[in-house]
Amino acid sequence: MTATSNDATATPGCPFTGELPTDPAELQALMAQVPASHSAGTPGTAGPAREAPVADWVTIDDLYRDPFPIYQRLRAEAPVHWVPAVNRFMVTSYDACHTIEQDESTFSADERASLMKRAMGHSMLRKDNPEHQVDRDSYGSTLRPGTIKKHWTGIFEANHETCMAQLKAKGPGADFIWDYAAPYAAENLRLVMGFHNATQQDMQRWSQTMINGTGNYADDDAVWAASEASSAEVDAAIDEMLPYLRENPDQSLLSGLASMPIPLEAIRANLKMTIGGGLNEPRDVLGTTVWALLNHRDQLDAVLADPALHAKAFEESVRWVAPIGMYPREATTDTVLGGIQLHQGDRIGVVLGAANRDPEVFEDPEEFNIFRPKKPHLGFGGGVHFCAGTWIARAQVAQVAMPRVFAELPGLRLDPANAAVNAGWVFRGLVKMPVIWD
View: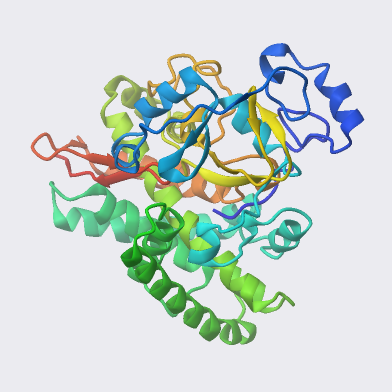
């Protein structure tokens, strides 16, 4: 989703809820107040450093199938590893990932040779401040909670009715992801973005092929060709819609951008980034949450008895299986992270999917448990790049889709004769989820 700052948690000077000070003296004074269990590995702190261990046993295929056993082994050995298969240092502990999120001066989002830049252009997600702030501000009020409540929630409800009718028409045995969650998320995003000249099917194709490009660590030529074709289609759709929306404004992102003096290159890159995260996050969180509840009937019963628990199930799902499991950073200087020496120019993978299951922070982290004590997860990022799409994802999934899905599909359950399949690590979610109901 769109990256932006989280004003509610951006308290200057707090290393765990806001940005770290950039002045070295202020940073040293502040970190002296931090408990030792949290301060280890923070850039600039004293202590012995060692070179990162090499995890040459990690393969992309194994990560794609199930990354979590790999993350457990990595975290137990060290918070940072050099992983040849992905050509970067993978950071797997909560503290180390959180440190990176709060210190953009040491860990830059503007990575050189970025796969996202190649697939989508130079979006705000790959920029540091002040350039990031300029792009972020251009998105205006479209994704803010007030606009969501007043304008978008009713549209999400209408889209749910359409997609639910289509799911029911297919009957028991339909795939919850591809027959409901994906078209629902895609149609919501199409209208939020203002692509009145596209279909939800176009949104799905654009999103998946460009996302495949951003995660193309295997450098597959066919993946790049499909990504580039979708990128060109999005450019053409944007070029067609901008003049139309200048004359016919609405609440969409494209409409807001049409009246601003924003370079076309930035508009294109940021909207492509939004097509990626803005579709896969609500789709995958919705699928994962429903799947998890269907596998934990006691928790499902509690949710059905207390609708307020839909929000807790949503947050636990994002912690348990972060829909965006890894994003890149680049070290701007020599530094020490979690006792591991990093050097200027080192390419880093911030593995949120591992950080959110760190046993140093979460009790029984491998388990889905909506009743666990509330602790902040990193599923939507943090610092200046906290995901503004968080609020719109919560509205689509926890407020609209989940209550209605369980109310309108009595006896909903997974198909015992056709098992669901999870996959992915940079982006992870259900790729197959047949369901039946009464």
